[in-house]
Image (cartoon, rainbow, N blue to C red; front, side, top):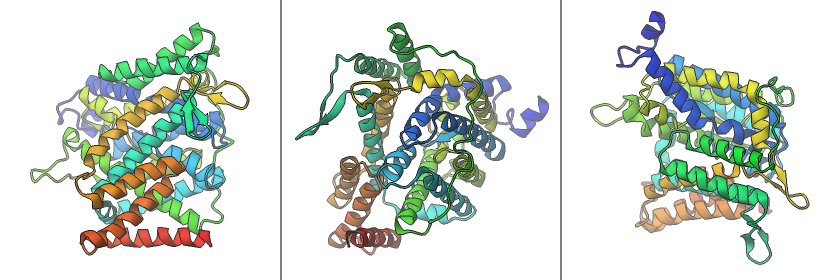
Length: 444
């Protein structure tokens, strides 16, 4: 025990073993929804549900424990919401890139992030992206996640003329999803740590009570990772489309990691007197290593979770809390029957599958990502228009790539008329030119 206290500097930071355990447990309860959501999302891209579940648990455990041991931060890691939807719906289903190649893309982006983490280039890249454009990307991803949540709940359905319309709200799965949305919202309003997880649990219990969900047990053998383990296909990685996707995953990973670390800077105690944030480089190395391991096991990009603040609110101040969270992830595969029960779809009509238990979680996650809208400089059209185009194009095309492309290109063009062209980072203009060439290339 004394060695743990010394290694993690528990006493030096004014904490205790019991407090760190409580903090790590609280963080796990807050982010545990990902083990239900991730397999559902990636299985939509043709990946094996059970293999993704196990890969998600093991890679999250690895990354969280590494974060705790190497950086001594109470930050847990897991698959990044938004990245997983981009992976499944834009890259695999939209661009028709096999999921095996998409995993290779994730792995390469993770390796590049690891290399950049050894230098200061990561900060240069982050500083190059205007705040409004960065916020527009976050909001666009949140809206896309919520849109898919509404579709999976059956609350909205395809409709001629208007593209979407209201579904049959009296259908049992849809009614269950609406119930789930309401109770999850109630937990969020009450600021309950683990609100999304509690919403999933309560919705599952109601589904069981009304016979819509069938009990399959609690404990079982962990699902095999064989269908996804080391299945990443690294052939053909030099096509224009693949390079663009690698760049997008890389940028998103850097944005997410830096954003979370800066946002949680005061709680982590890494804000210097001059207001600058002094981030331990090992935090980036843990994040990027987790992404590489996750891709090799069979899941999408990993990142540190802002929900770790729940554990810090419970008193966590050291990496020991992250290790505790990681250990919880490590034993979760033995509870696979629960995950299959919660994440299983309900058939409605011909070839329609609804996910009323997990869909409300996606809608609420979308809501939480809307707070970034305040970071858009709406009073400046040169900032607001690119951010808005990013948000809207992302929804209308269900493509993160196209949304980001419209945002970058419009920002670069409008900077000419706003007099900001020379003040704008050359990286923005270069990326805009490459994205424009991509459209012209494929149009021909």
